Image (cartoon, rainbow, N blue to C red; front, side):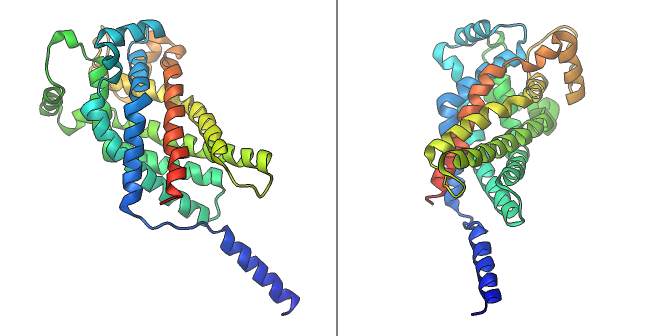
Length: 303
């Protein structure tokens, strides 16, 4: 074989090796996403969610006051308010949507020549947007309603409240704040997947060399790093909570848009108001990224 033929064969072989394996779309991937998200929500996820929502909606409260308010609503179970049925409905659907969409977009981006960092961002953005508009709008709104409504004002069931909102405001009413949810989810998962892939690459090179392979410790450390850094978009979360909140206050606009919610928060709480609840959200971001990225990669590799 000539030298040029050998060179072509080597390049061809390296190209084949560089192309990631395309796993077929299966019910197993969808069930994995749903199962992981249900696990995440039912353990530490919902308590962190309730804490950050309480603080974002009641921006005058300290963290200790927020924790006392949550505990006063139902003891330890107060930290799981909105878990059944809304968080379970949301988790069982959005996890499947996220893993399916993000995996597909990451694969196609990598094949097109994108780096793991860029492919992770593209996959996360697509997965986050798909989550928000397919399954999350209504459920996120109802979870926020559960945390922020005045329980002492009545004993209406959560289903009756949902029905009343739908009767008064229609589909727009029960999807209030969905555009803010989409912005949050898009930037959330773009950051989590992107930062996780970037950190994983850096850790592998540092610990194992240029041709090393990521182990479980690398994936866990990368997920913690990505989960914490993904909270840079906390202002979007505070705006989303304000749009969906049932808290009544003098001068608060009745029907909020992203713009009017931003103006209201700034007028009443200044710049720091946009970062209320960021500490429990960092905890939530780390936990969600550990489960959906690190554990998701671990189990997907074994399907």
